[in-house]
Image (cartoon, rainbow, N blue to C red; front, side, top):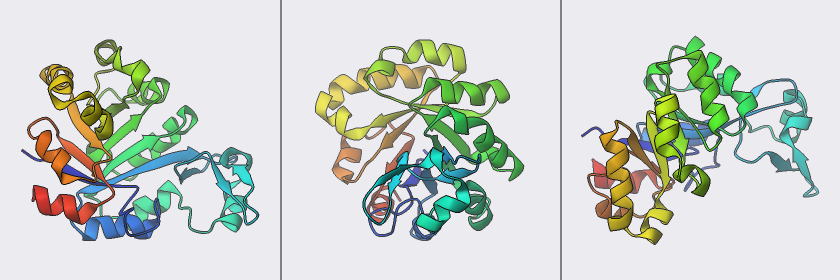
Length: 230
């Protein structure tokens, strides 16, 4: 089985997260691709950043969407645009682009399409509306639901409406609930055609517990997971 290994925000265990350097290092160390986060600046530029804010030199939180990209770069030169990432990485990179806010859906999709990488792109989000926008633009796009307590109860209905490519599950919660309990839900989702991506897996013992139940692994510790799965 072709299990995708994705660096969580790049090779986060060893390099600054969500930077081009971190993405390149994840690939160099055996990852198939990267999981990373899309947001919009005030002037509509898709950037890669996890939180909706960053801290200035005095530690004050500043919202991403209150600044233009040029203003943001003055504060934090390492934050990349999505376009820059796509220009730098190999065309066969597997992308799991998490849409952090539904306002970023359309431009994120258009960039991935323009660069010709839709076939190896998974758009995921906790926000159903964000992936719904993707589906409205493209019936064949791979979309995944990041699962929280609320969406857990509605996955079958969401899949029926949107034809989910994947369900993305937090490994710590699976372990907390117990593999036997969790595997019943996972088996049902897989039987309906949904793939299972696990995040953030930093302990290979968890992969051993879940053997046969996952199609993708998102990890900070790229080399450890590559060594186990390859």
